[in-house]
Length: 232
Image (cartoon, rainbow, N blue to C red):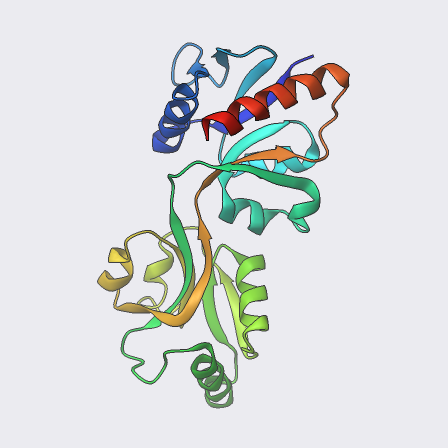
């Protein structure tokens, strides 16, 4: 029985993942056309490749349907409750860096910290009769961050795209989103709170703690991890 490795199925994340493994003597490749989601592995025995979306990989790891997977820290932490019981980080891959941040309108010159935001949120609710809205697709991480930071009067608004535009469009008063350069934030007249870093994310190789492993798979996994550790 082989070990199953899940890798992002397209784009720069797939290309950089293939290159990362190639530098360690493990050649990953897509079988057939770009529309096919099968792949091959050369350079190590007992490893099969599955091409999945980055968002699917945390779910497949937690379900034990794949033994190893490459995806972002943000997706694992957001999509897996008690993630440390389900997966283990094997290696950070050094690309796909992005920060999950909390941002407010740049015009809010007196709002720089979570304490400031809490005061504004309370005043906003008293004035408007509803909670200050924070647009995001990272509901678990943002709710935990705001609650632990003492912000009480907020409501999360689901946003699966163009999150930075929700403030201008008046569907939210603040946002929490992934950023790498901050250019889109600045273009939309938003600023990051001084203590508004929620999570630093990057592409990471994860091991499932729940995927079934017989003795043969355990040996193959140990050999794979040793190979990666030596290269890292």
